[in-house]
Amino acid sequence: MLSFEQALEKLLAAAKPVEEVRAQPLTAAAGRVLAVAQQSTVAVPPLDNSAMDGYAVRLADIPAAGVCLPVSQRIPAGTVGTPLQPGTAARIFTGAPVPAGADAVIMQERCEHGEAGVVINYVPRLGENIRRAGEDIAVGAEILKPGIKLRPQDIALAASAGLPELPVYRRLRVGVFFTGDELVQPGEPLPPGAIYNSNRYALRALLEGLGCEVRDLGTVPDNLESTREALRKAAADNDLIVTSGGVSVGEEDHVKPAVEAEGQLDMWKIAIKPGKPLAFGEVRRTADNGGGKAWFIGLPGNPVSAIVTFLIMVRPFVLRLQGVSNVTPRCFNLRADFDWLRPDVRAEFLRGRLNEQGGVDLYPNQGAGVVTSLCWGDGLVLNKPGLAINKGDSISFVPYAELLS
Image (cartoon, helix red, strand yellow):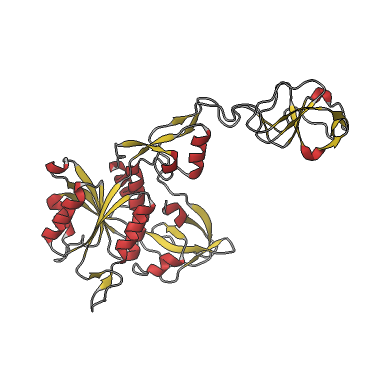
């Protein structure tokens, strides 16, 4: 069997970002992946400006507290004052450019109005309450690196640098379908021997949460020709095809021979729990659809196995196809508030939850079909093969927040 690290390395080595880059206005760029580094064409702030509502002054005019200075001008934000006359103060507001000659701004709470002007009850320091031009961003500075998924704060940074749009990779197109005559959609009657298709809704939500454009081909009948037809249809206009179940070697498992007929397939046994089987390969596009290929990933059918395998294997592959540089989720060392004394020979991804004491609790039933364990928890405990865990041990914990974006 491949180790988790070996399998992930193989996946990421195969993944190359989509080639098409599109310019998106800032209003539509959040969540997209930046394709080209961005530089600022302006200094931020463009001029020295006031960090407070108060008075712009010269240090030379305030040898001691209690000095009264006449107010020579008023400078609201968005206006530029005249050079400050010696022996005077300028009324100034937050964000307004500091007038030439002023070397400090005194907050209004340290001043009071007198008959002859403003009384300064404080001796300021040089540069106090002045934001210097370019202290946030210098002209020409790189403000955004390629390969990042753009967050609201990244959009704000681009806007502050005056960039109206950003070059991003186009959205990844992912086709999904599901095989199994036993599958029934929620809301329909449940005949004997049938099950509701939870994986369809889980995988769609996971892919859409990663910013993919998902094309759902629904449930495909359990026969070879229908499965091959679904593969051809999915490959025609998608970058990646994702399925769950049907990749074993049973008489009713048609995905494996269908992919082999339409492209090529590697069946991997990965030393992970839950999970283990993963099918990875490619499906050829017809000449009418421009040739080339679509990647294929077949996940296990058990719902917990499918979701966990998606989070730890498919998510980084999808992110790399989208152009994301860093696809490794952050992992935190926390205290185990549970015992796990019979570990598996495989790497385990246990469903856990943070508690109020700063430790991690474990869901009592870690079965591959227990979806409630995923909902109860807020992350995965990463346990190395054969490693027993005792209460108080340090464990590796990855929050779902790291795995769902």
